[in-house]
Length: 221
Image 1 (cartoon, helix red, strand yellow):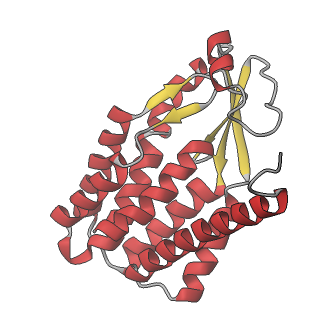
Image 2 (cartoon, rainbow, N blue to C red; image 1 turned 45 degrees about the horizontal axis):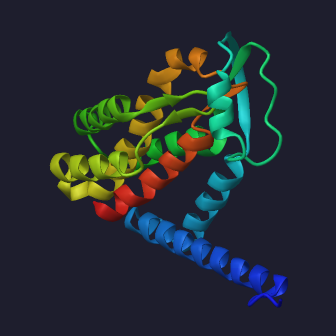
């Protein structure tokens, strides 16, 4: 019996779908950064640095941690690509370049170039941080998870209320830093219970949250 699609046609279709998704994401990212006053060249450079930096984790220190339960291992088995790192009873705390260092540096740049008063920036970051801390949850064997639209919507609304004249840069700043602080730094005490060999600040699932939050929050603001 002949299948309706050959392997070549299936791979071609898959390639086209991936290409469309990439084009949409890059387009949305470019539009978002254009609202922040960056040129197309600067936007693409930031995008490239962010994506390449997401693969770089700089180790800071290690802590004693609990081993993940068998139930957690079975639940997420097959969802991760590649062979998982063995758990040795300690978790390495690292910082991700693309998900932490670059967003923080870019946020400082936005504060300085837009001359945003700290009396507006600090409360905005605090609001999103609190929201992310409340809605984030530790996932044994994986890391910290947070509902995808919580942070960007909160950041956009906060920016529009506190700094309507600079809503786009404020949305990026409080959105990215809010996720980083509320769903990562404030969740460090929970890392001991996750049973993961490496916990990267701004890495893994949190990188997706920070990256997505920055784009959507700016588009909504």
